[in-house]
Figure 1: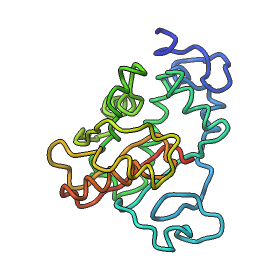
Figure 2 (figure 1 turned 90 degrees about the horizontal axis):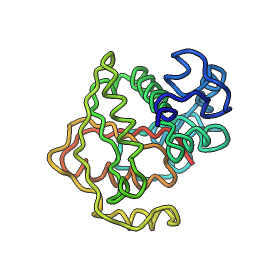
Figure 3 (figure 1 turned 180 degrees about the vertical axis):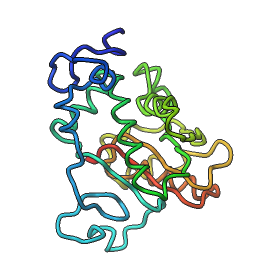
Length: 228
């Protein structure tokens, strides 16, 4: 337990951590500085990286409908980036939550429309904490709240009913699988920032945003640390 909360090895390279700063993030300085956003341009709607387009990706230009107003994604779910999330999510290297929280704060700080948004975490499936021992999104949000230098507010207004595991389903199947499974427990904030760790088809964010909008939220944004 001590090594999980106060690691002595970098979650990426396995090297020794030196000093309080490296221990805080669970990453050596070299690895931490190497985890940066890989796309300079991103779709102004879905947040996917752009190669040749100027503002929006082909899918969004062709009329793909989204319930959210804007989505941000930070890192590809490949290579060292994937290992970072795997170390956190499955290896329970909880110190990495401090690093992810910092990246969330950075995204909020450079986007004024997010300054007064209320964070709403994607709800875990029923039984997840019992099966895995924790919910990585909830833990991350709690780390965000503990940073008293950043004024943020969180609402746990989204709840989730039991459904099939999403991993083997395509986007259409995922949307159908989650239909009616994510619901509001109380009134939603007027401006929301949904937080999730990784986006694959976008179905979970879509269903969450749809539920919030139907319940009365005016603006719904999303932030996913990784995109697959």
